Length: 152
Image (cartoon, rainbow, N blue to C red; front, side, top):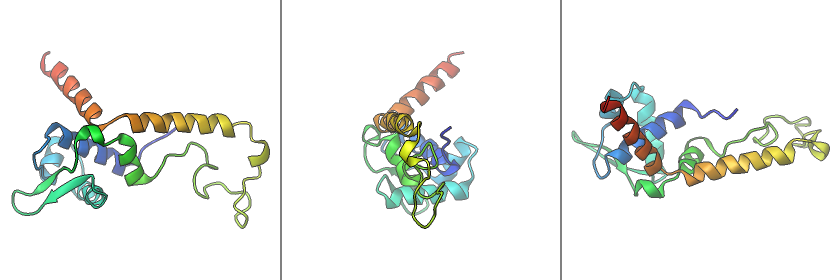
């Protein structure tokens, strides 16, 4: 089924952490100490998110990253689209992944495909869920899990 790339997973983890630390500048080192993530890849992902205006960066010894806008205004869908594009469930939905005739760019099953419409509806529903879920939602869930864990 749908599987996010490591880049997107790490980006969502980093952004959720930034959401829980709203207004604070967090370094890549701090992020990677809080979660077992590869520093180099996390730094690359945060640079990409910075270029897209999702995070702001601060240089210097006390530098790092902070959310560029409130966590409630950033959807998971926006992050996924930024880091890997819109998700596809079937090969005909992805750009050129399964093309029976590469020169024409046509799937030989397209005219009578029994799953095209239902799969398109599933994809649209999935995308709606990603768009309806914000970083604040992820951070709220993270806080609830942390609180439950600490109260044991």
